[in-house]
Image (cartoon, rainbow, N blue to C red; front, side):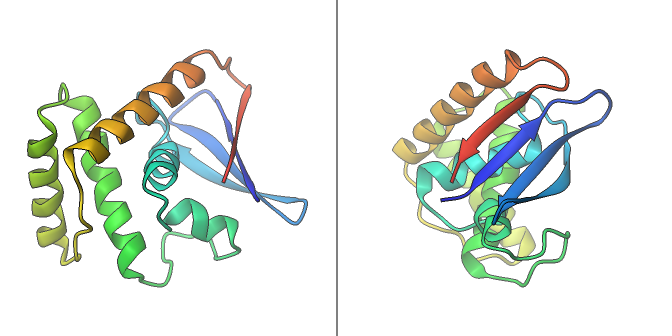
Amino acid sequence: MARVIFEKRDGKYDAMFVERAGALEEIACPKQPPIPHDMFHYAIENVLKMRGFIHRAAAGEGVGFRMTLEAESEAVERLVETMQADSWSGRPPAAEVIDLFHTTCEARGTQPIALTDEAIVAIRSEIDRLAAQWSAVPTRGQMILEI
């Protein structure tokens, strides 16, 4: 089991640290309320039990912006974009979120994963849980998540 550590910082970026074999690798993490961008990855990967950026980074793959293309992680990336938009747009019905996800996948040439209304509700719940914890973290404080 690996850990990811999010650190709240001043400015446009928070930090995410991926722990592998006792060493920490720092990744700049854009602030995109209600939680940092890469925490959206964690929420989705955790709920759907899928392999995306967080799991790939924890497994030792380079954390640069150019990972090897994998169909599942590309679909997770499109879902991250969709769930961020959902968080900022007042949370329309889950069916509309799924439609937006499919539109996003089509625009990017990504094969979509199967989603249900229940999956969207579960992801929203996880985002809300993480957001509540994150809002209580002071600047320079950390939040540790197991993957």
